[in-house]
Length: 509
Image (cartoon, rainbow, N blue to C red; front, side, top):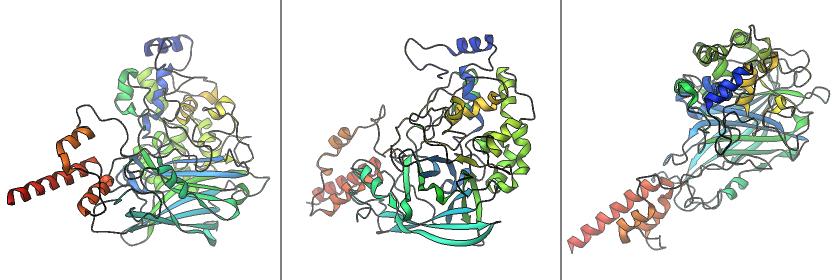
């Protein structure tokens, strides 16, 4: 399913696609598929007014799937801090020290979490007299040149009716993978990634650190729904951005109620300390696109502070959604009849016979049937394409949830068959075949020199002998080499200052 061909002889105009689909009686042409992320900001990237100003606490996505290489385990990935610019130094990206990053698991369908996995972080700085994130090339997580580091603890909290019944420390003082500053600062980032994978008891594994943002879609919807004429489609606007990820792989029987009830509901939240010193929930995410597409502005902050067992207050947003009406008003594609009980199943209950637990209480959770084994060749449209191991049965990294959600919102489950998509079908980077599966983060030194910018060679020619490789007995030059962590601009400023100092000395003599 490729609604808009990107290149070659197969390219067709949007107008042709629109006309062909409408003539055939279809709901929409290819380009209309781009409307799904219209109410979204890249799943949960900046999706609500208050959290948009608090990126350290902002959930972006949750993934949950049976591990393809270890099918007796389940992998859960939760991401935070949207739109991390790889060159965003000198203060790179850290988890907040005053937050609780929580993964909730409902293993009986009652809309309450029976298990809570809590990650808490602590930042460590070796030398506070420098502005540098790293003072030299970093070759390991315990390298003394990595000036700013983080560590974390994991607590497993068991609950019954929202009351804590037990608390167990699963991990203590585990190292976080750093932000990928660049090639000079971190010449072998993959080694740092591997060192950040920590083994837990019973074959479980954990990882926390920076990763390439795995979500893929075209976000230019905000320009009057893709330019008003569908001329702005087909570009992955999250390409090149990173996120901070928490990944956890656990034996499946650790999180399920029993072999007879293999469905779990999963969501993540962030709690931060308020002015009174108490923790309060400021962000929440289960299924992708819910708080963006389904909830109106008046409910977005309320949803982020709420819990699944209170989701009845948002029911009307699901049964009477705004998005199909917007599509109809702009593109004259008839919205499916309301109330949309089909969306209640997808977003609040799970699909009956697939991932709906018995006696389910409607609640917004990412529901995964852990008894369904991984597919050898996953299909990006998951359940809609006959691959029951994919979304909305959990969510894999390769699942094209934008296309899937759009087709469902536009009536795929109530007889309005359609073939919609946003022309972004996969992530720009490939995913790994083993835990934590995420692609390595884009480096701060990525890419070619921008048009009109000064190249590295030009800078060296201009600075002459002021910019030379560091030597063991020259502390000023060591600072220049270490300043790769501050980015190219920092190197230029430091070197220029040294040039001025050298000239002043020559004049003095």
